[in-house]
Amino acid sequence: MYASIEEVLEMSDFYVVLSLAVYVAIAAAFVTETYMEGERAGGHWDESRVLGLGMCVIWPVLACAVAAAAIWSSKPLMGLKV
Image (cartoon, rainbow, N blue to C red; front, side):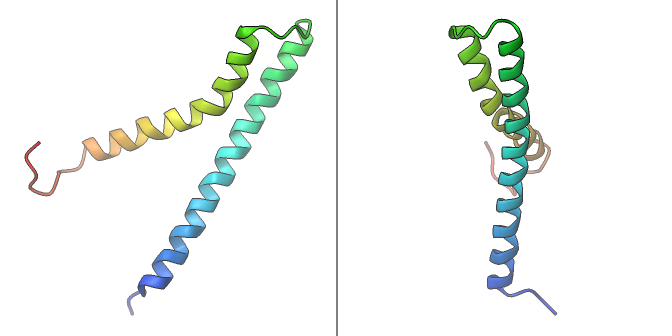
């Protein structure tokens, strides 16, 4: 009838692994495209190119943080007065 705590934790692990897989796929796609764009532009490694590759890895985390903040800010805080 109800899921046990072990079943809930197993489902939670599945979603964490799925989320990480999606994150890695998105980051890899954008890092690859940014790297190839740099190669087409001459292949010189400067601070802008390194920063661009780093941002390809970081921006999905920022997007998730903004989405989480939007979800949490729209829910009541269960009686907490902040």
